[in-house]
Image 1 (cartoon, helix red, strand yellow):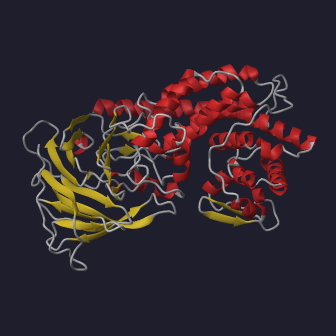
Image 2 (cartoon, one colour; image 1 turned 180 degrees about the horizontal axis):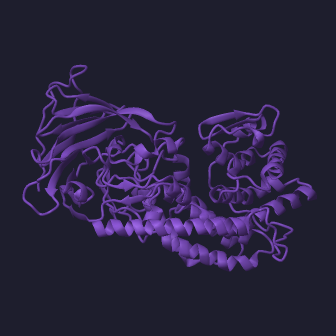
Image 3 (cartoon, one colour; image 1 turned 90 degrees about the vertical axis):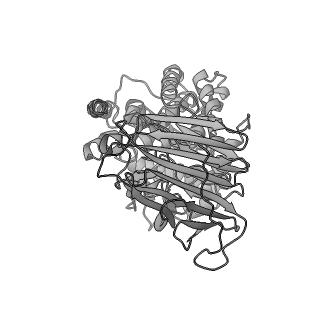
Length: 590
């Protein structure tokens, strides 16, 4: 483990050095204020506009026309000045504004007024920030804007005069030239691939760029092989990355076809592998599992993407390269993280949630969850959300099973805080039986610091109404007994905010009641269940208060914790303490 940690530190140093040099060279070479007269980049027309799969709301067009811009949970009202001169309330708001994805709402309104409004706003941006702006010309924001301008070109250019048409194309080509030099500076992972998609789109859509198609396609091929795993998951292990990337890759596939150019096999294969993963991460209620950066489920986008799924078969039960297990029985769904930490450069969104799980019932109620990530103000919550206590798993000594780099220098160059060390040795065994599915997994995330291995076994009954689990703590050195003074554990189960939790009168369990009166009883054999405050970050409207069930103890005294979660046929007879509930001991057949 020490040798592995040293290797990670060395790799981190080289990432910092390489990233810093690349950023410096790219910014000098591609800066908009640097004009290279020997490089021809003039063009006179757009050939095609790629489709935009993101849903649009025509009612927002009238708000934008009235000068009301609502992004990232903040609203700015224009006071007679251009919106691009206003002080942004947050960086997230500003990034959405200058990313221009909101143009789709104006297109949905489909009127001469909205087209004129779109042209006026684009023209204002070209005048005020078209030469340079530190945020607007950041690679991830720039790539989003290039894709938006290309896909909404029909809206912006219809009814436009020749002067605006040329001004628009001149600005667009300048942005593409800069992105070509700085795409490598984009944050590792989804943002980097989106920048490459923007370059491929521009090569296909703009006249005079035919010579750029082959290198852009090759660059796309290499990045798809690097980021999309053989099972269809993303190398960063964020389920939300699959949604974001398919929204870009499906239109790109159609753009190749529109130009009568065969889409590259790497693109087709990536899409074919990613589609089944949409169903893999879906709970019985249709929401996405909250692991490694996933936030609120974009239900409209998910349904749009599922319409492109031609297989429509049963989801996979195991994603070995992504590191997830899916247990499904009679509509009950349990999804569990059994994967190692991603590569350092791809771990900027990764969470320390090894062996955490989420469970949704046969009646389509999300019961046990992870905290996830909020839709806005993500940086304010990121440190808390990535820590192990924010997941439904075991925490030792209030520390995470992985460590994160928080140096400001690394955050600036790499675009975030990578995961330095995490579980590396993970053993997984699964047995699908007629009466139940049994999953056993072990990780070594606490082995080096505390000398402890965490083993979790879960059984999901065939009817989906009974879940039994056991958490076992073993010595990492092979000794029969744990010999450590730092062995205090907390087994956490975060409850979805729509579920009401009531502690049983004897302290050995809790009653969970869903909004539709679907009642479940949580019981622990040896130990007490505490009901503590928690926060569900993945709400569509922002963080929501909830509770968590917590079992505390010391691994030397309690080397195993057995618990069960079972559907109950009746509700508690008294308000407050849940009395009269038959408390069966967990009977995990191991």
